[in-house]
Image (cartoon, helix red, strand yellow):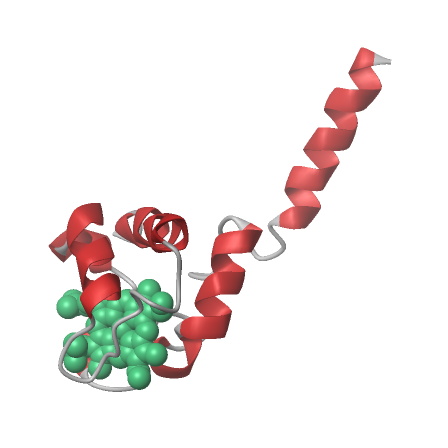
Length: 102
Ligand code: HEC
């Protein structure tokens, strides 16, 4: 029985990640928040659809998780603030995920 549970978890992991190398792979809930709120400007591959700075593929190299959370909360020149659209938990989730993109 125990073996079966482990096996099932392994299969869920494998199938859950679909294309493992896509920049949009990650926790399903976080990716959903990204798709809903950020994809329009930052793209389906995090490649950025506005200026050069909107490319997030390696954002973790230039910004810490705290920097990223602050940016999402307060917005920027062309980026709207998300303080009132997302909860602090959702912003943290996004920031933690993006900080891994190096
Ligand atoms: C209306 C378009 C737009 C939306 C929506 C948007 N962004 Fe942005 N974002 C930008 C632009 C443009 C920049 C470049 C700097 C600036 O203009 O503020 C940027 C910059 C950033 C940066 C900093 C990159 C850097 O190197 O400075 C992060 C991190 C970021 N966005 C994350 C997000 C996340 C996460 C979301 C969704 C919650 C989001 N953005 C939604 C347009 C957008």
